[in-house]
Image (cartoon, rainbow, N blue to C red; front, side, top):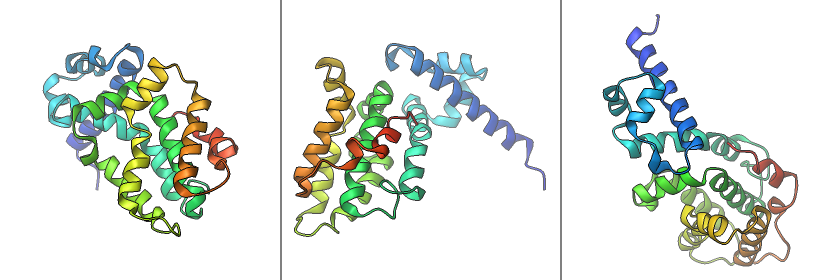
Length: 209
C-alpha cells in the first residue's frame, strides 16, 4: 500500500529541516546565532511546520544531536570491538568514553547548547549511556557503586568541561584523550593506557558522526 502523501511530505520536511539546521549550526560561531526562523527559511518550510515537528528550539537541537550521534550508537550496539558488544568490559568502557569525548569535541557547540537547555542527566541519550556504563562496570571485579562511578566517568566528557578544556585552556585533542584514558584506567584499576586512546579504534573514533 503506497505511503500517504502527507507522511511522505512530513518525512521530507523533517530531513530538509535537519539538513538546514546542521549547516547553520556548523557555519555559525555560536548556536545562539541560529533562530527557528533561520532554520525554517533555509529549509524552505514555514515556521509552523518547524514547531509542529520539533516543538521548540531545544527539540530541534535534540533531534539534530541524536542524528549526529547515530553512528556512535550503531557502533556501540552492533559494531566490532572495542566499542561493540563482543568486547570485554575493561576494553569497552574506555573505548566508549573515548568515542563520546571525540563526539563532543566534533560537536562542541551543539552538545553545549543541548546540555545548557535542559537537565542533562534526564536526557534520553544520557540515560542510555549511563545504563550501558553501569552494566559494564557491574562486570568489573572489585568495583563498588557502579551507578555513581558511571556518573563520574560521564562527567569527564560533559560538554561544558570539553568546551572549557578545548576552548579556554586550548588543550590539544590527543592530550585530552590521553588524560581521559589515564583517568579511566585509574578508576578501573588497570595498569596500562587503554587501546582506545592510541590504537586503531581510537583513530576510528576521530571521525565526525
